[in-house]
Amino acid sequence: MLPPAHGARWKAEQPLEVERYWRLSYSKKVRRSEAELLEELDSILRGAVQRRLVSDVPLGAFLSGGVDSSLIVSMMTSLGAGPVEAVHVGFDDPPQLAKGAASEEEALNHYRRVRDEIRAFVETLPASLEDAGPAPGGERAAR
Image (cartoon, rainbow, N blue to C red; front, side):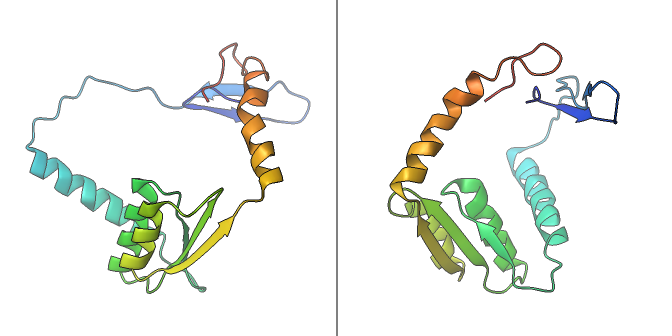
């Protein structure tokens, strides 16, 4: 496990190189209106989604039930991706936000319920990661 904003490079018969690739900086203060900032954010997100719409097969998206995945599916369809194969995986009924995003955006909605034995296994994962010890460089990795 690596600390946040770190990458690792491994070469045969050499120690693992762990390097920080990004550091948050508060030095640049942006003085723009909320409307200007929202317009810029929309442009950046649409550009990022548009670059990933090149495909020889139908496009799909994983709907987690959160705002971000629903926003991506919405942008995919508004950018002409056609009906998006939207996949939800969960323990109970599909989250309302994910169902709403799939239906409103004319996505092809696929929901799969996780079996109880897989649910029990997934619930043990956070504890097993915590017991993994420090990440390379001596820091504990973020969960």
